Amino acid sequence: MKKFNKCQSCGMPLKKVEDRGTEKNSEESAMYCKHCYQQGEFTQKDITLDEMKVFVKKKCIEMGVPSFLSGMFVRNMHKLERWK
Image (tube, rainbow, N blue to C red):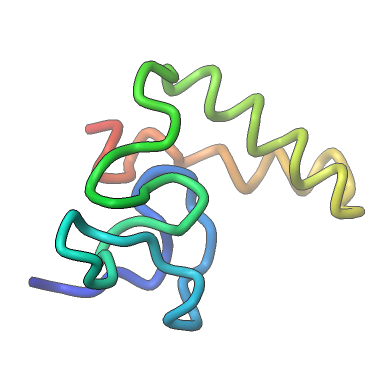
């Protein structure tokens, strides 16, 4: 399976192995980060795309990213595999 370079749920960069989520068999996920996916399941199963956009924007702002840039990070979120 192809390894993605960003989480296909929230868009977080997946640069390190420890950034990746885990499958049911405890292997690293090829698609999702540790915040979105653990033990083969989404951590926020019922979240909508719009709710995820708000969540990611808030996290970016908490981390000191300017508001206008956080908006750019979520602009193409609908193109990620989880939301297609």
